[in-house]
Image (cartoon, rainbow, N blue to C red):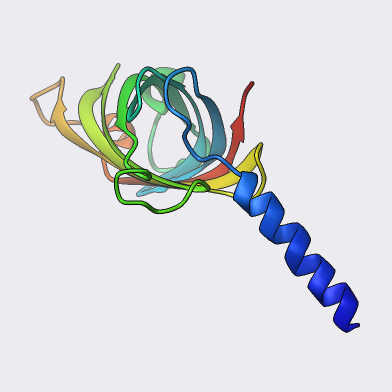
Length: 165
C-alpha cells in the first residue's frame, strides 16, 4: 500500500509539474461551464488566444437556460456574445505553472463589463476555471425589463478548461 501511495504521489507530481495554465503568445484555451445568476442559470463558453507574455484576447458567449417562469425572455434576451481582454497574472504573482488568475474587460452585445477568473490545471490539457463577471455600463440607459436584466447583472461561472494545441 505504501508503494502505491508513493507511486501515485510521484505520478500526480509529474503531471502537475507539466500542467501549463498560461504559456504566453500563441496559447489557446477553451472553457465550457455553467453560469449562475439571479432569475436563471445557463451555459457559458469562452476561447482565449495568447497575444503576449501576460495578455490574451478572446470571445465568450452565454445562454441563460433556466429562467424563472414569470420572466418573458426571448432568445435575444437569453443570449450574449462578448469580445474579451485578459491580463494573465499567474506568472507575475509566481503562482506556479498550473495556476493562472486573469482580470479582464469584455465588450458584449448587452454591455461593457469586467471579469475576474482563475484557472487550475490538473494535467497539461485539462483544468477547472471559475469566473465572476459584472457589467460596468449597460447599453440601454432606460429601465431594463426583467428579461433585459438577465445579461446585465453579476454572474458566477464554473467549469472545465482545455488547452488547445
